[in-house]
Length: 240
Image (cartoon, one colour):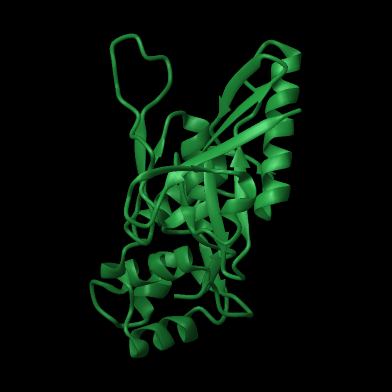
């Protein structure tokens, strides 16, 4: 029989273990990570931190995980996400192990998503057990398991460019936002449209921020440049 205990932090910050069913409705994605990865001599993986648009630091231990963090931060469906907030400790037939998801996220509708790393074990039985642990935990905790998203190189580069303007300091005021959305009613080059808005030096930063929020859009299959055609989305982008 497969036995699973999920480790996470309580509201007070203490490390806690519970059966998977005990995590139904628990906002672990809002909790502090159980640990922070450490750099050390000889480490093969990349160690970096993605700062989300909400100002939350999210540790990533590979370029694949970093790219996934950017996609999750850019996804209007995702309200919040964090890494290293749960560990699934399992025992089965004398064997034991730990599964650490890449991220736990919450959608704007309140659904919790678990994004799993690709199987790393060369032993087929271990990989199968890890997938079973994820499925059983998700079923009992009312989570949905998804594969780690991987952005194409062009999309990744474009999202990185837009992410520089994700912070609140680039957010346009009500009047400035309305002017820019009106300016980009038809497709026009990003830099040219910002200048045409007559909002001054901050107009371009405002426009980039609206791109990040999804209120302006472009052809994301092509490199995003100041000369790229940008236009207003038919529907408003992500929520604040």
